[in-house]
Length: 196
Image (cartoon, rainbow, N blue to C red; front, side, top):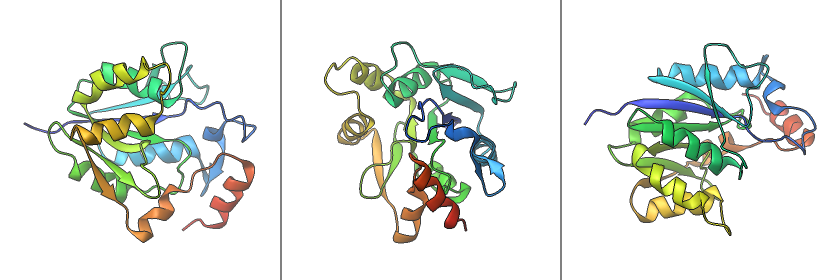
């Protein structure tokens, strides 16, 4: 079975701790939304989406926005909505707030994915918003979203790993730096001071 790819950029967070929309922050000379979309385009996916609670004002007109079904329960809501719409064998999810991720790592993850099985990097924790999901995970996402106690991506992905729908990719020491994310202004300043 041939592998086919949809890539989705997750921008649905409310950026409360940052104080402004993270997607509009400039990193290495371009807004984060443009940087992340450029890297996803380099993978040459069959389809490219944005996952959000509402269409962002900066969103390029040619890109479809997959909206969370209300009430949103965080990133699992976005992942569920994207998996339900999926017409390819796999979905690559990337968070807006991982500015140090590069296309080489994304390409490596895509190469490691297999028919019916995705891949998730692991640093100190699983990294579910820089991961490849198989279309077969759609039913699992819908079930997890109905759990009133736990709608965390960590629990969801651990469940997929137990079912062998996902495999774990242990990041090398040099790759772990790609997963510095930005929740607060000081995180962003730290990322800026460590631009490669």
